[in-house]
Image 1 (cartoon, helix red, strand yellow):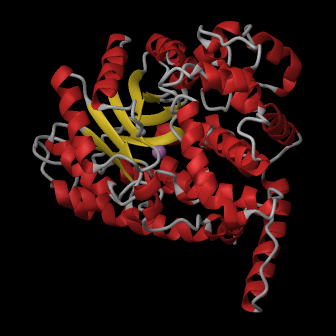
Image 2 (cartoon, protein in one colour):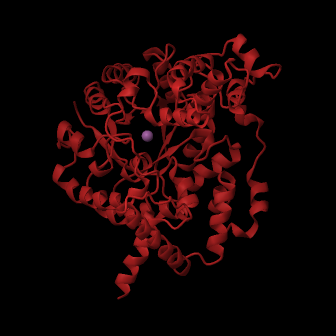
Length: 499
Ligand code: CO
C-alpha cells in the first residue's frame, strides 16, 4: 500500500457540509496547535463557501482568519478550495482579480490550492494556475467527478493528462456528491497513476451515499497518495468520512500507512465535539446515508429544493415526473455535474418544463447562459435542436468566458474608496460587494468588543427564547440578524475571564 497522507477538513468542508459553514475563527484557533502536531499531510482551512459566510454571517475578515490559522501551523501545510475563474465567489471574475487573489492568498499564508471548475473546462483554470504558480504556491489540479454516458475512465484520464500538461503539482479526484463508487475509484486511480506515477493523487469524497470509506480503501490500494477526512464529530453524512476510521483502517505506520497515531486524535475529537454543539441551530438534517443518491444520482439537498419549488405551486405530486425530466434536461445541456450552480439551473428548468407542460416554453436566464457557453464548455456539445429552443438567435460563444471581461480591480478600488484599508479588502469587495461593504463599514464604525456585546446580549436572549419555546413545544423563530450564537458564547467567555 505504501504511504498515504491525510488532509483534515474539519475547519473547512466539515463545517461547510454539516453546519452551514458557520464555524467562527475563535472556535478553530484553540485546536490548531494540537492539530499541527498530529502529522496531517495538510489542513484544509479556507476557500469554498467560508470566505463569503465569514463576512456575510459572522462579520469576520476571512483574510484575518487565514493569517491567524497560518501563524499556528508551524509544521502542517495549509490547503484551500479555489473555484478557478470564480475564485471564492459565484461568477467569473476578470483575470486581474484572479491573479491578485492568488498572490494575496499566498502572501497571507496559503500553501496548497485545490483548483476546480464545475464544468471541468480547463480554460477556466488557466489563470488561477498561473496566479498560484507565479506566487509560489502548490497547484492541485482537480477533476470534478460525476456520472453520465460521457464521463468515463477514458474522459477523466484525458482530463488528468491535460491538468498535468498545464503544470499541476498534484491531482485531486473531487467527488462532491458522493457518487464515486469504490470500483470506479479503483479504476480511475489505476488509470491516472499508471499515466502519471510521479504526480501525487488525492481523493476528496463525501460520505453522502455511504461509498466513501470503501472508495478510499480501494483507491489507496490502487496507488492514491492522499485522502481527505474530517475528525469524527464533523464527519459522516454529507461531510467526509471520519479521520479516525481511516487511520485505524490504513494503519499508523509512517512508511506504510497514515503516519498518524490514533491516540493523538482523541483530544482534537473531544474539542470539536464541544464546538459542534454550539452550532446546533445550523445543523443540516441530512445525516446518515442518503440512499436516493445510489438510485437516481440526485443528492438529497437537491431533492428538497425541488420539493420546495413544487410545494410553492401546490404540485408536490409531480416530484417523480420532475426527477425524470431533471435527467433529460441534464442530458440536453451536455451533462453538467449536479453541483452549485448547475444543480439549481437544471432543477429549476426541469420544474418549469413539467409545470408549464411545454419543454423550454419558458427558459430561465441561467439555463440560457449555460447553453450559451458563459460558464464554459459542457462535457458534451449541446444539440442544435435544444440550442434553438433555449437560445433562439443568440449565438453560442466558443472562447474562454473570462476573455470577455474587462479588468475589474481599479474601478472597484475607486468605488469602495478608503473603506478598503488593504488590497485584501478590495478583493473582498470585488467578489462580494454588499456583504464586504457592510463588513467594512461595521469595522470602520469600530466593530469590535462593544458592538459585539450588543450582538451577544441579543443573541443570548434569542437562544434563551428558543430554549423556552422549544421546551413549550413551540418552534422558535429563526434569527439571522447577525446575532450569531458564536458571538454570544465568545462574549460570555470573555466576561468570565475578566472576572
Ligand atoms: Co467537498
